[in-house]
Image (cartoon, rainbow over all chains, first blue to last red; front, top):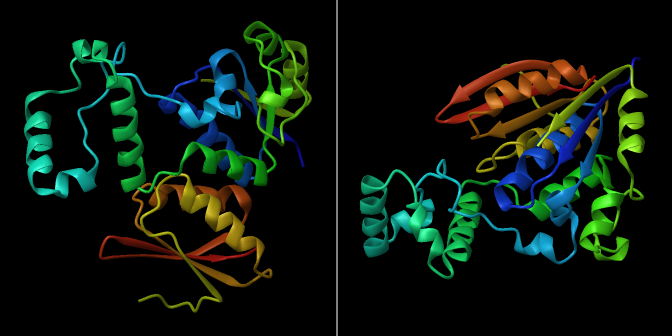
Length: 182
Length: 78
């Protein structure tokens, strides 16, 4: 059978941007496609032992973010009514709110809660599922040096750090190669 | 009601994309060829995703039942 390979390039280190590469990779692998994720620039944070626990979602510079409260909050009496009112007035968190100290952390907590209420897997869970499905997780050598991340700073179960040539070669070895840039 | 009898049931109620597909794949690994897996899902996305998974992996989607906000798939392992 012809080999099909999907290579995903993960370049962003925020909570929301951690999801697309992990969801696509774990799913592609379970569909029988050989899959790899190349983590470069801020995407390295997704596989960084410490930083992966503190991935955040920022309201600033993200006008597409909806004003959405977790369903469990909306069900509570007073907070729920307040949340409903906020949702009715604002299409999304006003950009100015982003300058308030602690707002990014607050938004992150709310987003994590919303995801949990909706049965969306956590980043840690998705990484484990990727590993179980034999997704190759490749850290970018150059950015590791740039950010001074040691291989030991990253989670277990990764491939050795690779460069652009390693990655391109991995993709083109397949009969049917695909690349997705996130 | 479905016309097929399942050898194993996987309930993914409350879980969202991509978990129903990933858990289906794992559950199928524990079955023998020809056995039937029943997958229960509340994720509307699984209505298209489970058939796509079956088409891709060669397992046969024998029957799909939709009742009370639940999607129930019967998959025969290849």
